[in-house]
Image 1: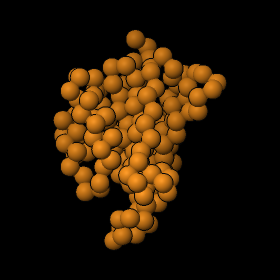
Image 2 (image 1 turned 135 degrees about the horizontal axis):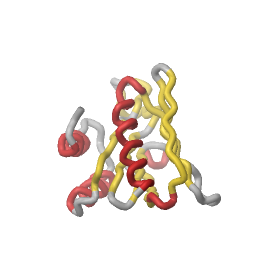
Image 3 (image 1 turned 180 degrees about the horizontal axis):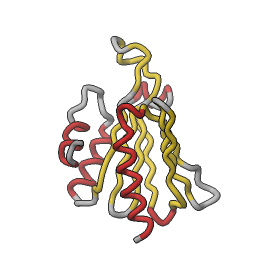
Length: 147
């Protein structure tokens, strides 16, 4: 398992063109010593030879001292064309529970929020690549929730 600094370096030196917003969010968390852990789910392309035809966008998920930061890129046609991204800051006090559902190769990570007006977070991933990362992330969030 990679250390936190190795994970940061891996994200910053990806072959995929990471939106500048991802880089800014990550650097800000590192510089302010807020970062506890991170997961970078690489984008899925319909054809590995054609990196412009994205099936599923990239996801950067951070746990900080104050909450969870979720950044998504390439989730819509517009954001793919213009290099846009969506970012969401979720304070720990807004989290009701976290779930990790796994079945063979598919995993689903959920953050259930305790407010009725905000939508919950759901991230699907390949368990063969990201299971341990999401399992560790849940442990960090759990500890923050009981503090």
